[in-house]
Length: 464
Ligand code: URP
Ligand code: ZN
Ligand code: ZN
Ligand code: ZN
Image (cartoon, rainbow, N blue to C red):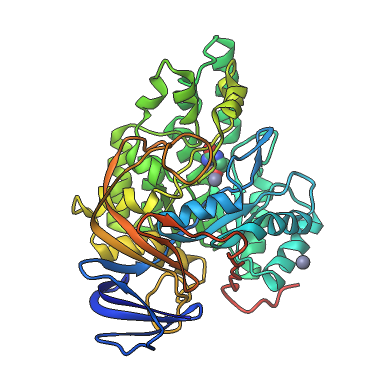
């Protein structure tokens, strides 16, 4: 039942220090130098390594029914891949179909997530509006550990929330002490640009970024921020991909608004040249929204993370295999949108962030776990190495290397956007809820071992 991690450097968001970490059951029970441990304790030697909070990926889609198909990864394969990469908690999304009851959708997703190997919790999407949605938001916050609601400003004729829904839902979030989050893209503009391109015979994946230029994203980011400003709500903007959206966030924060921004590992590392490939499979495998951008936007996103105007890193893990992507062979707008990354986020951000001097190890912890835990109200249970916190720990070998490949990855989908990239800095051991789930390249994920993590509202819920 006891595990002692000896001789490493504990890295929290506020500081790094030499200490042993003793875990008992699913909790950390002691942190300090030269700790005593029961004779039966399993010893993990962390000398020369960092001991950090397990990663929190605040944006994944496992088992998602989307664009006429269902993602390749379910909650077991997706969370197991996360554990292999040092991510011990995911925040996934319940996405009701328009007119579907929120409670029905919520319970459907909870059922699918029973097989998760790592901890999970849910944002719930508001895809339509009526009195039942208003009521169910209250039930979810009061009784089901939900404190964030997602609004897709894109995906017209599917899950897009119009302005009426945004305003009513943001207002309801405020009343309940929940935080609204948005996928910021102007769905009408995307739709019209897609139709224009297809009319011109430009049906291949290279049209995907043309249908979603930065201004399309920035318009929606500015609109969501303006609505939040008028209604006095905080707002969290998922997958910020361009300089213009970052500028909107930066401006709002400078004006005293509580606006948070999320960057995806993919958007930080990969540029839009991938869409120029003649190989449909390759280009289509990179079709996600917002699309990968030019290097100028990547540099801006890094500056956003460094300057504290972007707060979290995620993956938007949403895998589709080549056969699924082929649905858009003759029409790019039908290519299921989404890419993977849950296994790779920690390593690629360490490699491109810490090894380059952009981030300190403590800043790495901030943007890979602590900030997400604070913004979504599961701190200090998650995102911290301290007595009483969950024993979700990654022992990080800064000298270890790995060449990322779809051939060796643990998630499904058969493709990896980071293919061929050699990263320095990898997890040697991952502990989830006090159990060793990854050790020296061996995955010990157990189907069903993951737990739903309740996230309390940001104030006592008095509204009905
Ligand atoms: O292309 C993406 N991002 N697919 C997943 C759904 C979403 O928009 O987050
Ligand atoms: Zn219920
Ligand atoms: Zn999105
Ligand atoms: Zn997403």
